Length: 627
Ligand SMILES: CCCCCCCC/C=C\CCCC(=O)SCCNC(=O)CCNC(=O)[C@H](O)C(C)(C)COP(=O)(O)OP(=O)(O)OC[C@H]1O[C@@H](n2cnc3c(N)ncnc32)[C@H](O)[C@@H]1OP(=O)(O)O
Ligand SMILES: Cc1cc2nc3c(=O)[nH]c(=O)nc-3n(C[C@H](O)[C@H](O)[C@H](O)COP(=O)(O)OP(=O)(O)OC[C@H]3O[C@@H](n4cnc5c(N)ncnc54)[C@H](O)[C@@H]3O)c2cc1C
Image (tube, rainbow, N blue to C red):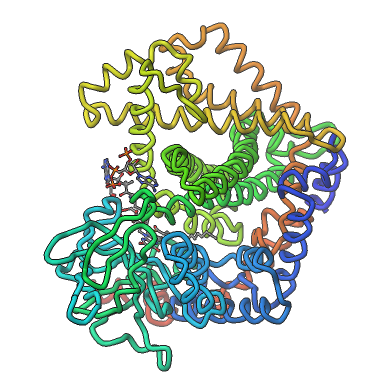
């Protein structure tokens, strides 16, 4: 059978130790063991099947998601899973759901923006899921511009309460995941008003639904915002709309780590920077970078395996056609994506470290690295999600016609992934934040303040001072170019972190060599993509450009025999991939054929509607009627 033989033969060609590469990909032997065990647990549990997801109506789809979430929680309790194992389980269930926001945003917000007392009160409830929370920041009228939010939280000194209110239609909360149908509580961002004075945006814990019958509490209007892009995909999530009509909450439900409101209605600022109100976004952006490597590697795994199974043209001496993976054009589209998946993995690892480091410093009242952490998380979130969204679509094209079938797994992966370019900060808006940070750093050159961390290279580039003068003309006017500069800065981070990874001790036969090849592919591919910029700025000569391209071609040949093993190292189960084209055993054609017959349209041989709409045409009744 073609697919079986092809992938088995590919695996036998690998020139490195795949098991050791799995450890590198996972981050540690321990993480590999956990993710391997939990992914198999999910794959073997029939409740977590996802093969009919794209065919269900929204209501059935959503109910099925609730069933899976409840089952996941039951298994977590029964098996006494650790926090790490539980997170892995939710990841491998692979279905966007209210749980993501509860664990990923509601709890981290209370941890990051609540006082010790508030954490003690709310976290045990949230950890035991006695309450379910979401993150209600975005409104109908404002998402990117957080300072433009209109929801008000007015302090009432008479009752020691805040009155949460939606004064306009555009102040309706709009988008929060988990809000529409499930959450009992939300962290709501609104304008803090004391004695008619506006103190800007802050977070408030607000109960939305009764814990007895799940009905909205008085003064609260709540619902789902409707179908989103694609079938299945992100429609498992109840993104919601929420309006408040003078809803009262106790004063101690304002998250008070950054600033406190006293019983007398006095605002007291802590010593922490006010930007900590934005802290959850930094945390989630960091997570999104690691997730980008998962989504991209998944698409690349499907496209690589299928490219080794698929044969078109080029009859060889043995009478069989050429595997499409052997075409240089296929390699030049696929291998940079394979390299990007590894690059994003390692930059994600580094970003996790940076985030932990900034957090430790914050505990010790050292706020010096916060601006850099914000710029890095914002910029890398933007770069990696844009590249991943484009990369998934490229993988679909790399799989030809079959890539367009839902059973390839790629359409749903694309549909579910693309909002990552928008949520947690629109990618352009985030790059503008990076640009601001870069301009600020440049403006300080020569003042005796040496650039540090990811901007250390700036101290070595003389022309940057002139750049700063040019930008004085107007940030907005030059913003399209500044966004390009921000992307270049982030690309530099990705490449440097890949190189730093290679400087670590990397055990396993041939593993380091493969990673070096991938790192070089990533760097040279970026150079190739932006050749015009490199040449026009005199950073490289035309001769160097052509050498770089030749080197890239030679690296593709080096990676070719290892391609299948490099995607096997992601250690994905067939359940997680949910792709007929990406099956581990390569048994593509019989399974594609089998899948087609499962479509509900094939339940009957003659389709519903035949008598009303097809038969009259064939019997020429319609034509006769017109004549
Ligand atoms: C298991 C965990 C994973 C779970 C993941 C689940 C995934 C679920 C899927 C989807 C969830 C999606 C959830 C959401 O989308 S929530 C909503 C997200 N919203 C946004 O991201 C809004 C984007 N907008 C902003 O962040 C801001 O409005 C802004 C664009 C940064 C502008 O801010 P502002 O109006 O205050 O203006 P400035 O630009 O002048 O900034 C002032 C100074 O603050 C600094 N800054 C800005 N942001 C931050 C930050 N986050 N941290 C630290 N510092 C920050 C900025 O640099 C300025 O500093 P300066 O020194 O120059 O004054
Ligand atoms: C699937 C999904 C899930 C979400 N989940 C949540 C959630 O759980 N909680 C929550 O609070 N929110 C959530 N959101 C909302 C999300 O965070 C916002 O949609 C996002 O931050 C973008 O904001 P916006 O919609 O206002 O875009 P806009 O800012 O209106 O963007 C529209 C266009 O304007 C451009 N633009 C905007 N400002 C500027 C500028 N200053 N300069 C140049 N160009 C600009 C953008 O680049 C974009 O092209 C979710 C969104 C989605 C799609």
